[in-house]
Length: 580
Image (cartoon, rainbow, N blue to C red; front, side, top):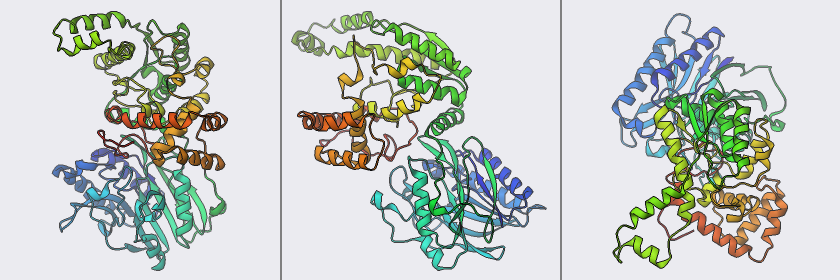
């Protein structure tokens, strides 16, 4: 049997665009003489469509495309091709308003329908908000074999690590029913280590069944989908996709096929590179939002250097506008390093010096015009309680203002350049992360260094200098906070594994290092600090700081989720609270 794995990039509500990609897959499958073509989960309306689904015209657009697929399947030459496509089905009975469904279409008729059985309600997923769960397995005959349908979570009865165990196991039920193969429609976003998790789940539950697994690819808001559609048969990995730049309509011969590769149990297919997914996420966010130009503040530091590199790879260097904005505290070398970076990348370079002291003086003079002793400004000055850090932060606010002016005046999408470790500690001024998109928002500092070191365009001087906001003389990030070798794992343990006690953190570090997990820039520095006399108190201070910064993080722009728990739609923490 020849099956076409239609790995496409969908957009919520783009019915004409999604239909064009679906139609291309159907035409390709027909040209290749395929018996079936399988598309991703909710391919017709796009995933995640969220509350758009409540709009009457949205459901109508979805139904119109479904009817177009049915009509095409009845045209001459297409009559024997089985088309399996994800769509939004209205629920006309009691319960939630929709089903997350897959239609099996052949010869101008919908011959079968599958409603997703297991609805995820954890991390970024809230499908129980919209969908009523299906109740039945779906089995149909194709080429003399029995095919079952699964939609994404239907395969993954493996959520012990997420405290989300299912009583129902559709995969086991299909196996008990004697099904020969599973067509699985997926919209499974990337998370670090996700491919190995998928393969582990498949290897433990598939048995003698053949799995045709089709996943979408592309960026969608805070999610990035890594594709990696695959076919497993007789414990052999027959095919896995490595394409994340274009729609792919791979044709695989399977189900009673003699074609085999190495043993599935020992296979270690290579995951899509993290950097490539960051580029993809930004490219899709810009293109799908209607932007072809990008602007960012470029300081000569490692974060903005990596973001500039990602931007150039995403939309092309000639569409990237990098602005150097030195102040009186900026090192001359920093501006020169940024200038060299821009020349290496081939992007546009601008220099707009900022002068913040006269701005602060003028503001404070105007604020101090009211001389009443009950006035906040008067009392603050007289008590000596004026916060001088605000003067330093004015530099960052002016930079934000200039970037936003460029964006507004010339039509370029502004990028934020903050990373996850800084965001956790609130180590940015309130507007720094309020632009359109933050490509490295979910990267720890160690990951920023790792990716930057791989890029020949980033000058060595940028890689070697101590990270600094340069808002005061001789300022460095690590003096203000902790060395990143310590801070990265502290943040990771707190955010991803909810660890907030020093002893538990020490045990977490020991376990992570024993497994050789990459958690720190320097494990020796981390272990030495854990033994230091002030480590317990310093740890508690940092945990309280991270907890108190939720109000700032809530106002940051989106960025691609690549870790188990990211700041954004999958992390639900109150802003006002008395708990850290």
